[in-house]
Image (cartoon, rainbow, N blue to C red; front, side, top):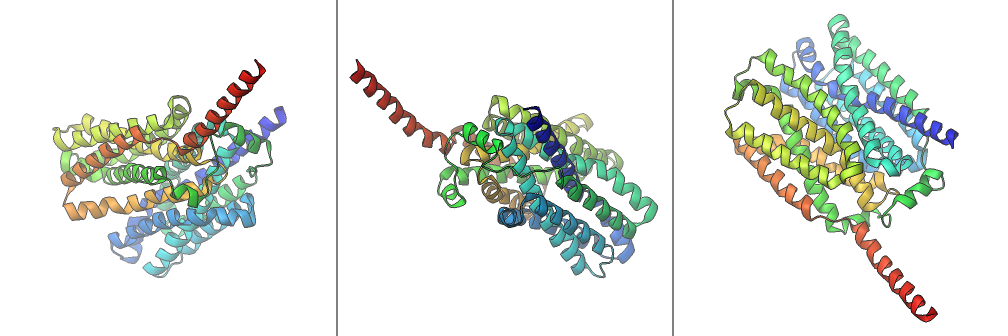
Length: 415
């Protein structure tokens, strides 16, 4: 028993190291201005690299489970680490924007998403009784990697320049992701983890096709899209909101970026663990309601320094919680066996949400109309969380009813 627990502890440690290495991609904004200064490219053109990376990350999750079946989890994570690090190292020599888009955008994003979804799903399979906590630890480590490496990459950029910074970043990413992979062990149905999966499951394991035939999958997609779109839009423009709506100077408004990273990470760990005890959909309901309230304050209340930072911190906390709780919700609803595939489909709400905020803002014109749209979407999704029920519960109920009838018949005959 002690040996099994020690092994699971090592798997958790390995997953944390891998996820921290993967989370470093969220320091990309540090590289925008140095690349502009070196090559003379437009800032908007350089920043498009991260949009491509985010989209490639989301799309890659659709194919990760198939690759895991062919190669095995450890080999796939090692390959992803080498690909991600190699893409960053080669980006240091990118002669054009298109090569930057290909290497730092498509290649790095694809590698990141592949290792992210498979390592996250695996740790949840090892701890089916603590899916929310494990999801929180894994996704929290991803966010912590972003927070820590803001300081690491900033220091390297300042002292060595952008070319050397890419090389150092790539080498560190390879060491962390590939190194952490050797502590990770794949959870299989035949293992003790697999036995616990069956014991903890509420119903059948849905395939992707079976999942998509349920209305719950579409409702979850809408809810997740709303949570991601609202969080990513508001977090991404926090600095601009501070300067334009609150009248803060650039340095003060910039503090919101650090605040977001901190509360985003805290939300992932706290709400992930809380969901194991109070129910996951209750947590999502609360985050959507808090986000709607925070957005309404940003829209209709005279803002000051304190109120602005409270709203930004609340939105970041809720967003971090949502991206943590949803993998566990998908496992609860549709089973752990195909969790990687099923969550990958729902996870497309993240990629689409990342792009939709800016599109909605450009169509509606400005902060205020977009805030109103976000508030309405959050309230609609909040209502959806109140009515949605797990299809796994429905699958179990008829069997339980039949069982109870059979027991009553047996009891009647024996009497």
